[in-house]
Image (tube, one colour):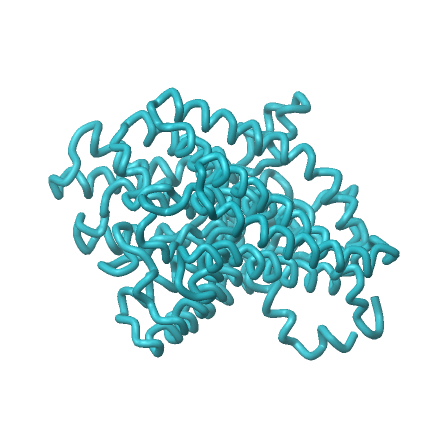
Length: 485
């Protein structure tokens, strides 16, 4: 699209999403009403306001052509996420669970981006509707992330995501039809996993309200819990292994599950990204197991469970906690700090840099080494058996560089707000990787983000959005050229 940017399609899509969020607010209202908690009125009021504004935007722009240009898709992605976070914060602050809108915005951002960092200090005493709303935010955010990763980011060629671009949808104008077409299949798979996880949690002895909420946040790899001690509260090996299983399932490309439902099962076993991801988890779990064992914190099979749980939780960006691995020693702190950046597979609910980018980087390095050793040879980097375009490699390299720079800048900003180095570095890494818990006594697995000052919370909220929307989606909006042509 040339000339001035037409905001009407952006407002149309944003209006639909805001109205959908408003309707979703009625679910925690029902939960509070059933529990005889007066906070149901808070959710009804927030629902009415949110739905009214969403429908107003839709009504004002419903005659707009449904196609989206690349610029409109970029703007829509950022505007819609910010709008959803802003309205999703209303129940938190209106219920009085958090004291300020800053805290409410942080909690809402953490929920929708499936980060899992929280400022609520007493989850054990929180109203049932609020606990359900936190879980629902992560569930909706996880579903939105999958659709965005499959339908939008490949079209925008963000961070090498064009590797997953479907040939049948090769123009930006097809973004909306593409999203509509895949969303129903993805939603069915997502609901199926959530239901299965909930049933297994119930069978393992978890109460039904906890089982429903934890199922939503496990499959979404979000990590919000109903307990101050997270899943460690239940002290159950069965619950831990169920969580490990569904955190891994949530971190595998959901398009592979859709293909499996269509009868194409081989791709899920042959996908190189999935195999590398599972292999990396196995190696990291073994390393963590040795750390816990030789530190005599957790030994034997129990040690394997704690190691596997925390490795999977941190790597996938879920952020559940069963033990304070910060007590395992400085080597363990460094280890978990590193793996929090890795993430899961593209097209899943997981966060971080993503496995496929490391694969592309490895292939590019291998090609360069081979070219140096055999100058006359012809070498092509490959991903899943297909040649990788040089533009994809350049896009991945740019993403990796920008990721490191963003982490460094956010760390410096947090230090300038008065945080100590450990809290600032781990907080920046946790936010931009959408992991949740950081390191240290304040925001570690046993702490919360409540003690941080407001500037730090706003900076971390920005970091969560930046990491969730793959950096370029937001940063391109600050280029004057974006608004000119």
